Length: 112
Image: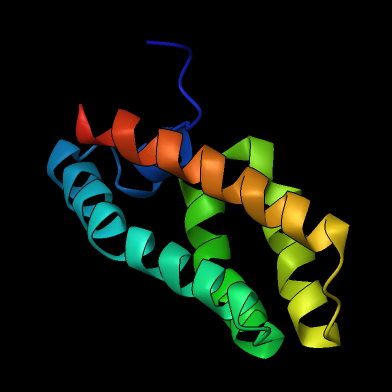
């Protein structure tokens, strides 16, 4: 498989090296974030930018905690675009990038 798109070092530090804590956090991330991502894509499709921004806000701490650095700025931009009601090619491109990176992260984390 290609290089990891995530970095668990911040999560491991937060858990004080407790492997069970990290495993629990990964399981929680995999349980909730795919559905949130789907909600965010559906909100965008239906033009509900306020919801898109609100869900981006919910996902943002996980992106940070799991060190998914390729999209740390994109998720923040989507949150702001949602708040401001901005829906353009840039919004679609950022959402697509976030979707792609999170899908890779989900697959890679499932293999832990």
